Image 1 (tube, rainbow, N blue to C red):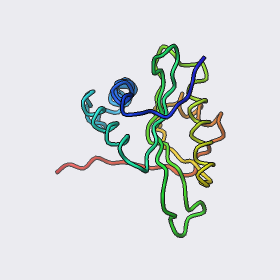
Image 2 (cartoon, rainbow, N blue to C red):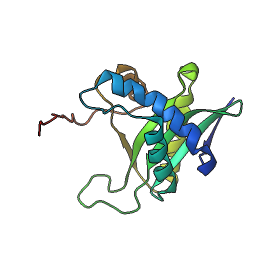
Image 3 (tube, one colour):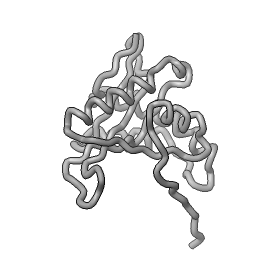
Length: 157
């Protein structure tokens, strides 16, 4: 049985390790875009997120081990002129490769949605890289739709 809980400072290293594992997929798939990252960089980023009052980190725990995580941006202020002036943003998410296909990612998303709803936030957005078809299909199954295409070009300087 998997429990979804809010991560604490004691969980930062385990979440960072899992973030690094998931991040390697991106590093390998798009080396022209992503700079190779290290576990230390992931630890620095996750530590900073954990201390930020606009970010919530959820952990999925199975048999006393963190097997998944989700980093969620929770806006404090409204954005003027937007359809949903307060929109949560899924910043990062991952499930241990040995635990995929068990509904852990779905449970993490549902917990994030519930959290946002309790905060009076009416929408959740995220970005998915085009190479990551499995993630794209996963999010579609959960009701997410594509609303724009973001493009990138690396410049020489």
